[in-house]
Image (tube, rainbow, N blue to C red):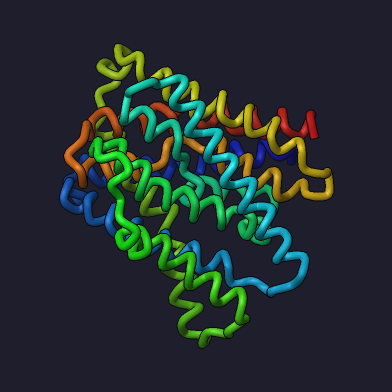
Length: 303
């Protein structure tokens, strides 16, 4: 089966999980407060565990070099996202946040595993860490208007920085954690995709399709997030040699993912336009079935 077809099937599975969240909310089994709790679990627990687990690999010269290159390309990809978002969305704070930060942890990892296996998730670790740190700093500054006021202490104490530092220590020292600890990490990390899809289902249940059709900002966000940014990233990754194909595909899939769930989480936490944030997620997720397989298929033709 081709990569685009495999991706499409995996996305269908995710849509089914979204449907479960939708049904649970409509049935009153998930409340708004419960959805906020899900967001806290994702931000403060499961996502950090994903970062730590992703760095728990054998420290070889090849992996050290790959980590460095993937970190550089991941950072460059996020800069591309921010620049594209600023050009397309201008002063739209929610739109900038949505178009800049994708959803690699919840969508990207299972999509990459479906086409490449578990190994290339390692190449996404730095990207995920940079993205979450960017949300914690640049993203929050967009929502609050307090640009440049993020303290070093706040940055160091953020769950994503703590997780990255722990992961790097484990990678550098090759310290072997007890089996019960690694098993716990596996279980908590596995919460990422289902919990995130349930939350998106709740957002879908809260959205109003008729209102979304009349918000031009949503179309701009979808254009920047799902098409312009992945295509520019595809061109950037073309600079890497063919031997790094798996790394290129992993980073490209991360960039081609829909709007990150955290735009709604942070909008809710910082009293920003929560409804608009939810709508950017819903629209981009609905378009995912077409956009991501298309981008990956184009990459196969070019690379």
